[in-house]
Length: 234
Image (cartoon, rainbow, N blue to C red; front, side, top):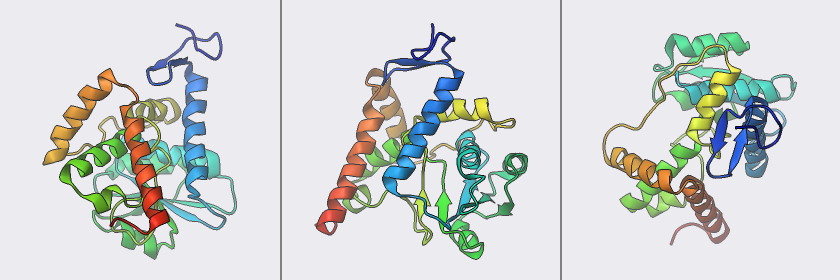
């Protein structure tokens, strides 16, 4: 099948959009969505030092590659790679190949490492699937404060940004394979507790209703905005 935007061969069909895209138009689509989310969330500013978390998975590697491509030549933005324990040699190889300074950050020590390095933002490879899973699991757990809280997660005092949070995990992995020389194949997955069951439930439902993950993210964004405007959950 041909690309919906040109006559070249399509490499992916987006069920939620109805588009079949070739390599170049797919890469452009991913990058346009990520840049749009950065602008919409007002995530970056002049003088930012961005610590990009590398966990050895395709999403975090793809995120670093994207940020280098878009912001690597800007003198007012600095990129650092924060390699976690799970990232290991694969993550260091990605950072080295992209020419980004690499720093070790133990599990649970990302905030301290980022702070010590002078980072103003922590960038994480969260995908749309991750956001949807978190929203649905949080709703089922009945945690209203978390469901309506800010988009960045965790207890970090350094703000977190997630440019790929609007992009399906499948597309992020494909983007990594198309744009990077070295990509770890194993993604970071949820283990244990309610989230395993929710992942199975969500995958099954999304297979029949492709826009489900987008709807869950929109719900999260809408609730967060409503709570910001009205002073939180009551």
